[in-house]
Image (cartoon, rainbow, N blue to C red):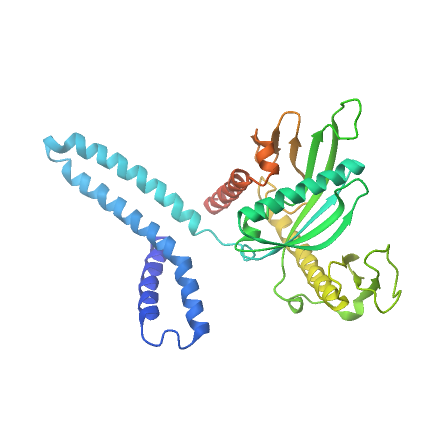
Length: 354
């Protein structure tokens, strides 16, 4: 590890010189790559320098042990330096963990009502608001792609696109079954009902061309956005439904008045869904070798329970319970997200040690 860190430290010095040299901006593509690389390795090298300083402090304190007058002070310094060294060593290991290639991607977020009828649809709307508020806190852009509203409010199904820095890295552990326990507004007896929704978080494909889609394997239907659907009603129909025949994946888009734009958006969602199937298959194989299902992307897995009467949220994968449900439903997800990321990093570190 230390040899690699030395190489990165030398590379940072080299980048500093290149970026400060005359003509550095002559080739903008090269300049952008260098600045991006500098931003990536800069924080790591800074922690490495602190680690080296802590080692130096420990060595200097060791030298003072021979002086009887300085022995007690030296021992305290050694203990403090060792604790600091251990802390920085762990930080460096985490920073050197293999990065998920999808972490910086935008996502398509799908929420579908499950068991529970109208209450499930209302909860789907609550989940959408929770993620939207979290996106606002992170200054991400939220774009509505497709929605199927229920009669009493909420959604039978809704798809949004979240655009911003590190969206997938923050929300990739949200895929799975979300269960809610509460008294529905329509319940006259005050009984607590249990219903559920499924959430799918899919990293956006770079381009449709990145996923092999044979046009002959697609069925494309158009219909009126306000209607129930139907093939080629007339030329003014703008809503688009695309069916990928080999997988049975169906994508609908009706958010834009332009049929061309809806088709382009639907193709992007289709490519992302196909990519997501491939990703989940790979993650399932990886998860089979680990104790936890974090990151497995298993839609059928019940990952979380939102209990309104007790004001608590429990994530069953990491046995985390937080009694701040109102804040969580208002988009305060940082504590939860950080705990999931920390558990995932711990698993990766354990796997490296096996």
